View (cartoon, rainbow, N blue to C red):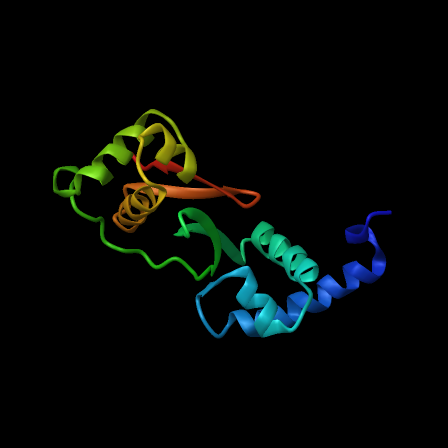
Length: 152
């Protein structure tokens, strides 16, 4: 039996989820290290709890550049509030237009969009945030993998 399947570990994860819910309520965005520090739990237990919370849709992972590499952050999912549609395609910055055109042909992940378009991941991330806020792009999760698609 693997450690993560052991009944005692599963019980720790269940208890951790309850503790993390209190910690998560204090702000919107979290790094794994911050959750470990704030909760006082072991990294393995926090990681397992994060995975379950992401799978349930309570947390959503996203990536930000840190020391030149994408670093995982977790955002507490809040109920979606309808927002007015953002700027028309012609009013979007050039990078956002390029990302939008790419997503018209296929659904894709942040890192692959950046690689295919030869764009730094932080620029692709900024473009995706702008496109999402404007209702041009949607995001769905398969496990913890964020997949972006064009909203026609």
